[in-house]
Amino acid sequence: MDFIKKLPYELIITIYGFIPINIRLQLLTEKYPLSMLHSYNYLLTVEDCIQLFVLYIRNPLLTRLPKNHYDDFKLKQSISKLLPKVRFKTHVNSDRTICLGHVIEQRIVDMVSLKYIPRSYDHWVPRNLERNQRDFLLNAIDKTYNMFTTLEGGYKKLQYILKKTIFFYLIALIRKGKPEYEKAQCLRDHIRIKKHTKKHVFKELRKKWIQYNKRSKLREKEERKKQKELLKQHKALEKMKQKTPKKVIIIRKKKPN
Image: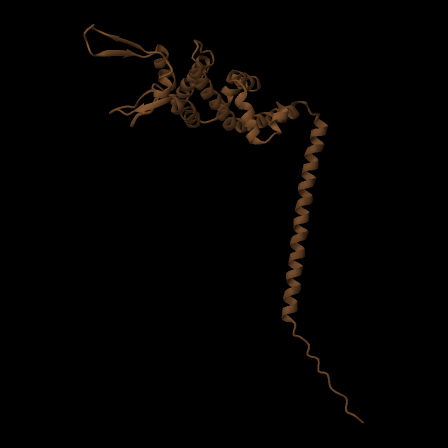
């Protein structure tokens, strides 16, 4: 895998295209466990988390059905065709046929649509809205991951689409949340080192360290004073030069004998 990273970008994409999606998900979750991915989610804002989920999971799988008071969602037709349908007639001589979709179709829509996520209304904001939204979103991500990665039944194309969707979402989450995680880790290590030095560093060494800082500050002040005095002297010399009149030297020619 380390050798693949050194290859050109186009060749890397071609190589990864031959790797099964199950192995790619396994490699990703081995390097970035789900606990770490949850910590990435906690470091991002709720708006960013919802935006990532909508862009990389809901939009590729569902289509919006606009209604009067709220928007409903359904599975995309290209994905819905991959699931078996049940067709029947209520009467033998009836021309009307009833078509029922697969059970998993509605289950995917309920999980992915975020239709029941807690929201604020025009003049009312629920208590602990951000925490409730984050909990709801993390629960939806867990359910989506568990369902998409354990899907069985012989529908290979459907399995590939769903697993690829969650795979690209995890990559987007890592790219967005990893820098914030590293910053938080550096800050946590800095606080830990500071606490350790306060508790366990010897008092004499700490005193010397404080004295050295004081002496360095005094030296900096003295240097600033010297620089100010030099500037004043330089300005005074320039003023003196401007005030003193210039000497006019007349060169007379010698008379010839």
